[in-house]
Image 1 (tube, rainbow, N blue to C red):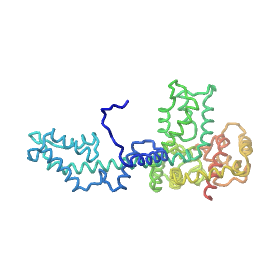
Image 2: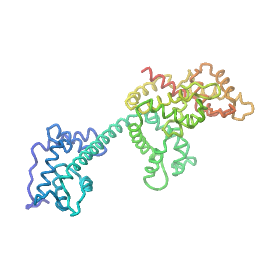
Image 3: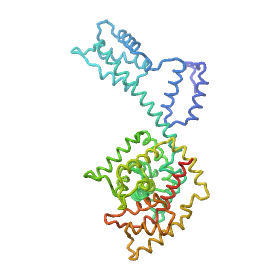
Image 4: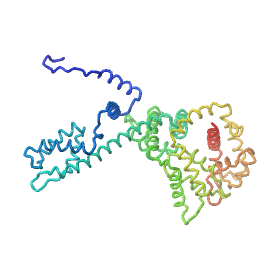
Length: 439
């Protein structure tokens, strides 16, 4: 209830219109932090109207302002202020320069008292100006970073999460979740959830898993349901993609150097080649968020020497191009519509003219027939021969990707089951990437 003794205020002219325009911008942009957004919006409005913000004062104008405030506080005009007088100066500075209490404390901490406990403001003013502009620069940088992050987040919402549209990732996550739910209770324990994430082949990074673990199980019953997990997963991935895009070096040569160092350190003794399985392990351990399909598509583009080894420099070049492409939001957002078009093609679910069941069945029959001892292992040369015979239209690049799935040991023998289970997915991804280049 309004009091008849309350002071009456009038609404400034034009205020309702300004408020309406601001509300429209908030609804249009839907910012995560409305305070930062409001600060930037009204600062921009002030700049358009020719008003000076805190950081727009020249050093001379700032010096004149500070000197005036100091002289007003220095009643006896001796050039010194005690702490009480000195503090009063900042009341004026707080309103004129829009300084926060924290910033004022920071500036006051720079003021050195003489033996009498007084502050010589002639000495302090130049110091104040340096500290003040440093704070303004830091504040503006923080605002720019916040704006950049908001833009990155908005882009990430339309991003190919884990290199695929959200709908496909959703289906894969549901499949991973159901397989981990062995007793079909409809939920996972926290330990089952961690294992589920690590075994998913979706390349979840350590940070992504850590954030998900801190966010999941909102009802705190120790049980994680898919309905709890899925929305949170997409939110976390979107945020992490945005941050990683801001932090990832945009220079491909810098990224290539990172991979060369990574591979060279693992090879040791000046070696120039690594086994495919070693490259796979290193790419996983690098915690870059690459899915197993992306890792093996990298290896499909690197020629191997017949013994399962690849050239380090060539591998680094291909890997850096892949990473650069993955974190190029503009390219990714453009690819999203093209990928949807590709997936609507009649032959999308065919690799070399074969559907998944026929392709996998043909591959399985050939490799099982070659394994007379039913050991689950074959020499890579035998694998090569039998794949070539069973699937004569297989291209060299496709063969390299398939052999990389086997991860052969030093004696050349490898478990061939991963080839049977995962080849179609990897080759379909490679086929899709090739089609994307033509759009």
